[in-house]
Image (cartoon, each protein chain N blue to C red):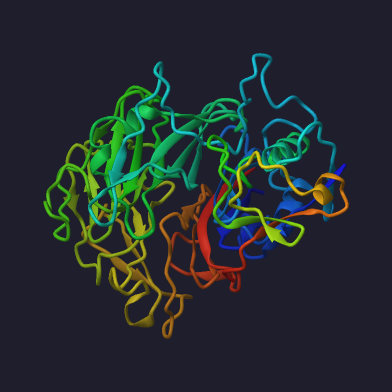
Length: 98
Length: 395
């Protein structure tokens, strides 16, 4: 079981709680986490990564164990603490605007 | 008694304003989708309870919302939670949020490039839906005008979208260039008398028409003059801000261009200027009276560099002669210190016997005139900046 924390607008959109718990078979990577997240909450498709290229949207970043994993390969395994659910994966929106 | 429902899109959510036919006492519902940019909401002419909404964000991209109960509840019409996200052969299922330009060999066009601000070529990139236009005949058929300029169609109630790629790929696409607000397809007009005919407009490419249901398109910009572009009489490249048509006269079009108010009497084949005695012919909105096809409305804005009313006086101008002769309508509108803008999709008319006219401002006011423009009153004063206004007239 892994844990994902969504930015507030996506919590509202998905009607998920402040923290989402997902079962993932196999390596825990950006791709597998987002695949599982979008399967559970299809309304989030396109809001975190592009529909086609699967590239992260520019104003979003991924933090794992206090480190920025935004620019790592989407197939790079996350740290063991993320894979075990000890630590949540944070999806964070840029602070800007009014 | 009849009712009206005003659908207001703002920078920070959507609002629904409701009143009976007197249009004096209003109920305000919202914000719906609080915090999101709501570019446009529009109801189906066939089923007024069916409303489509464009919810968008620089952070999270494009969402399409739908209501089947007149805006009380909303949902995304894509794949419900728990359903497989791919087809049995492994292909991703279409999603209501998914606007992907059609590059397929069967129906699509190659995804070429368009002109960028610096005159270099730039890839086509989907950003958001500016305008939603439901069909006159089928509540599940709806069109979406998007940035970067393209026209999409859904025939399943917004579940899936397919580009009408003949527009982007008709030939002049590589010479289209964005205005400062983005290369947006902001106007979609459906001809109820001729379902194969549609008009669209793009900033800053111009107006286009199809006569075969969207398969092929032609620019309709002859007569437009834009002295601020390299060829003032170019086939494309004009910054058209908005186009309006009365459904009973589908060959007559009215246009608010970057500068100039224009008119065509032959479905856009030729335009002529009808700015007449307007104090300034810069502006964004233009609309037509519900029952008088020659009565039109604009809101003059000082200039392209100063997007606010002349002298701080907010005034709608009305022409009862289809242009050239204009009268200022000021009763009930701010007479001083008003420096708001009225954006291109932020004016609408209702269908009541005494035609109501509505517009919203970047200052968050939505004004209503229940007497075709003679007098005005604010419905609300303090919304976020208004992006769009549509009106539904209900039995």
